[in-house]
Length: 255
Ligand code: 13P
Image (cartoon, rainbow, N blue to C red; front, side, top):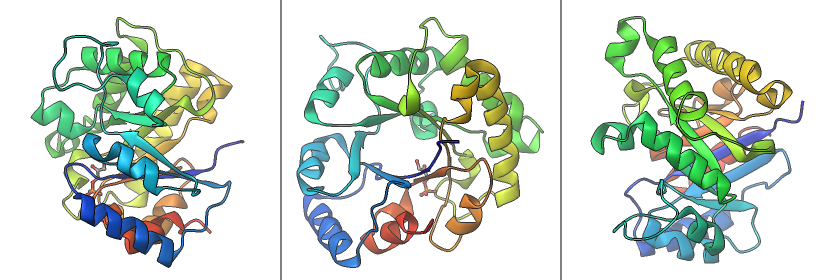
């Protein structure tokens, strides 16, 4: 078993330049215990990627984007080319976040193409999946999550090829995002265990080593019990990643 923990802050459309300055200064003062057991990532708004890359200094923090294009390059106004993100120094990209799926109408087809494009540019992918409240209440959680996994990874037009930890899955129940309602550790583990089954059935031994993050109102008060679950390998965190104190508490939680 080579899996360790991964804690990723998804800053969404938050943080100004001065707030980022304060964040990194405070993070430095509060102190994150960087260790080989814990990988840490931050996904700021695209215009702040270079600033964040400069600010991480000698820490082990990896900077990534919140989305990327399904195309390699060319006339796609407003889009982000994985190749250029990689060259800039980014280590990963989120793909298929529920806000991208629901607000911007991203489809499984696009998510599959984005995933293939990012991986072929050597950019790690954090693939986000998760059900709505309506789907959960209709008893369709596993069906929805499996169909999103298949759509992105196994049944799409583009073949998905990766090695090692280039692919991470983030299970984010939509009803728990930004609502303060966290899935209970047992509710989250139930879905994570199904995701693990899918990954092992699809990728064999490599499926055992793929990180599965939980996202949805993760905070210092609930992170330890979530991480105590066998198939929860870390968190994808919105609100609680914006303040350095709470982000540091999350990153130090596994110690
Ligand atoms: P919150 O932690 O604010 O619920 O957001 C979760 C999320 O969407 C991370 O991608």
